[in-house]
Amino acid sequence: MLIPEKLKKGDTVAIVSLSSGMGGDKEFFHRYLLGKKRLEEVFGLNVVTMPNALKGSKYLNEHPEARANDLMEAFKDKSIKGIISMIGGDDTIRLLPYIDYEIIKKNPKIFMGYSDTTINHFMLYKAGVMSYYGPAILTDFAENGEMFSYTEKYIWDFLFKNGPVKITSSPMWTNDRIDWTDESRINDHRKLIKEEHGYEVLQGKGIIEGELLGGCIDVFSMFMATPLWPKKEEWKDKILFFETSDAKATPLQLKWMLRGLIASGIMEEINGILIGKPKDETYYEEYKEVFIDVLIKENLRKDIPILYNINFGHSAPMCILPIGAKAKVDLNTKEIVVEN
Image (cartoon, rainbow, N blue to C red; front, top):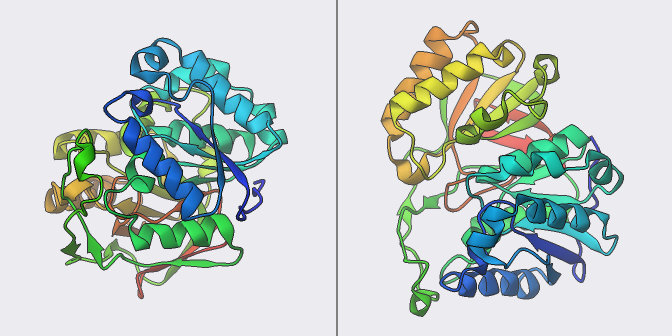
């Protein structure tokens, strides 16, 4: 894998809207401005917003080629050192016909986002470039009140520094809701809850190692039948990570998605599984039962190590998981160390 150069203060990063165009909608525009401001003031970066990123939901829904063009131009622009997604959505798969993998390969740079941006991460993986499954502009950089210190720490650790990064459970989390359209509440903090579970070992012990590969499981089914999905042998010795989205799939729907992954054959190849904290901890215990029933009891590999309730993706706050990076997972201490 090609590892992008780390960011430093003064570098230029680009904001792209690759799925939902809501960042350009008037009721959410103030969140875009706040996310951009945080990149500039907290991290000392110069920010450019790609030409189509603020054209709004209607235009970007009708023009997936415009979204893809922004991504390609951001990779080609030598002055841009990093690319960050505005937010996720539900149709990044429509960019697939417009992607030039050689452009990505010849211009490796930091790319970050989560949720539907999973599709883009696998585009970079196909091009052989490491990417960062992590914070987005409208969600994490524009967090009400201030950014979570847990999230900010991992941005510094992964995007700006070299050396191994240890990931541990966040001591606090939130399921609080503040209306994004209410600009008057932009300085209000969401209420935090003490973490009661920490990381849970569903199966396994000792240490597992492998390259990280994964994303949002809700999105997998959109591209598992396309050339974008890695071949079975490419999953050899990988550590699969996945999380569920804010759509909050029912336990039955989750069971179907997991059975599809097993049927694809990748479970026979991987070294272990990392599972994210369920959105708002809805279905926390029910999901755990599904994981045990399907991934352990039904799976052909009943020895596969599984670590549950990790703060990434739709969790708030969140860490970052670099796709293609080597990781060591200690199931005894419940720590993850990622080469960086």
